[in-house]
Image (cartoon, rainbow, N blue to C red; front, top):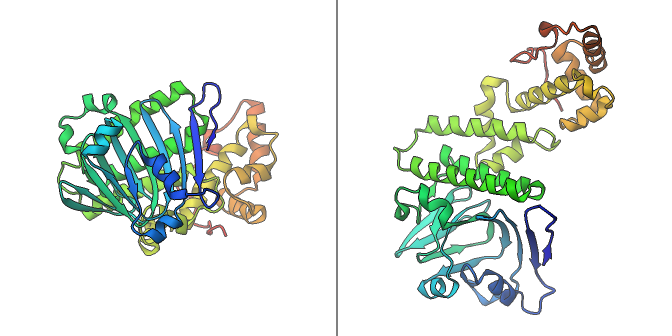
Length: 349
């Protein structure tokens, strides 16, 4: 186990339990003991049991990621009394999903669905494999915001719902930023997370969204995700379809009114390139570095796409912007980014 805590940074721990342990399953049981009584569905699974675990301590929220083998996790009255944990638990699985049993009733939670539990009450979870992002939340953070805490235990937000997408995106963003946040910033993120979660639970009491409303929520979330990950050259339909639990044909249909998913991503990238090349404070940065920052690793193809979009080469864009800045006559009509890419732009490959 490693502890990567830095001064004024969020405390962080990480662990890998695998074949180098004399009894990896016993080690995993010990790691999980403060939360659940862990068992394996068969002796064969127990013999080859592995786990990767990492956690950021946000203070009132502990945000953890786990990858592990098929598991049965039980929180019965004995475990509740032994551990004394009195927290709320919010999680979603990226793959596998799980079955949650509360008061004898089973509920299937698909990959991408967000499940809620009150750890002061019994619950059992059965899964073919753990692949989750989970928040353990101090009761005092959420309780004042919840109108009826009993409704929290066992609630599930659909992966297609706007509320489910909002919670999932917020937790993913907290995980992505964890290594760079200070303790004070972590507290701010915790408070915001509590508001997002409670708002989502309240929304779940509303009438189910229509399929059109769900698709609109997914589209907005997809656009947010694209804008946050434009620097990734691998960003494309396959990754987005997997992250948002939709088929590629559905993804293509959603972006048809915008010229297709490939063209939409290219438009957003070229908009970022245009903005950076027009910024005099970035004048010393190589044009290739600007392309790389926006996920365009084929500079020749990116240059052609840029010229098709703006009617000038990247170097002409930069020189014209610098000239206007030097003369104090930057024309908004010249360097204002239009809302839509010209029709002549071809998809970047």
